[in-house]
Image (cartoon, rainbow, N blue to C red; front, side, top):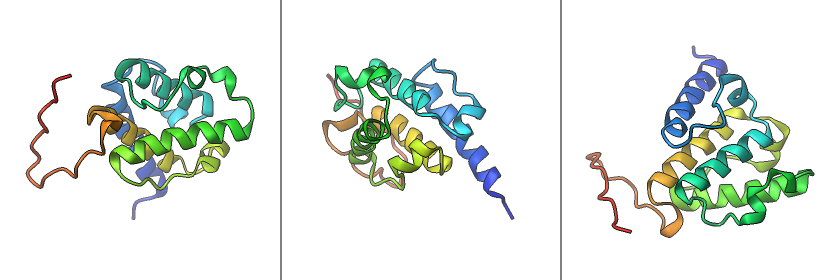
Length: 143
């Protein structure tokens, strides 16, 4: 039987692979992804936004981690990110309060993986259609 640890390790490796293709910092270390602190997540999302423009919903205010000192502001920020990602990739089993508390890291990793997929699919212009059974890469839209 696989332990929770195996699943999490596999999930972390997937996060490192998907996000590592998009951002070079922050360093996606296993220890951070095992229990991702808010600041680390914020750094990841901010870098993805800088590199890809996704999530488009984030404003200047959202890019400065200094604006997120208390639980409420962190949860509001995470809700924005989760909303943008789930619009692009489908519903996510992830709860902002759990993320802020450092719980359910496998769901946080699932969010990060979805974030990586969402910005690849062109992000929040329109929800990506479900991929066809034959894994054809979708044609890249001309900007």
